[in-house]
Image 1 (tube, one colour):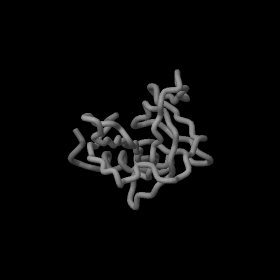
Image 2 (tube, rainbow, N blue to C red):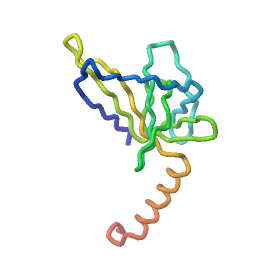
Image 3 (tube, rainbow, N blue to C red):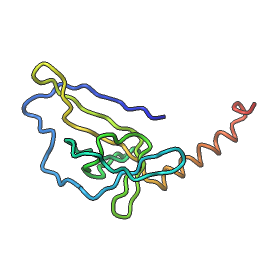
Length: 135
């Protein structure tokens, strides 16, 4: 499923939405088109918020802060150094300012490619061995 979740939060002046963390620029986003993946190339230089990328399984740990495409979504892959991640969930954080909500932070929760493949195999094995699911 391609479900994007949005979180609305109030923002106080003493919170710092972007700390002094290094922004990782070298990651490429690969969009899923049918059964194949195609590298995403932006059409213009629109304003981009960086994504804070976390692992999707407990214990949750931060992978890094990435400058990704504004249309990054579930199922997309991130290639960085020798690691490949599949995005499982994207969340956007908003603050109320000047009478409207404005986005101030984006998060992506991702799974390493090997772990995603292992989970998919285990899920298929469980579905095949479950006697209640057979028709």
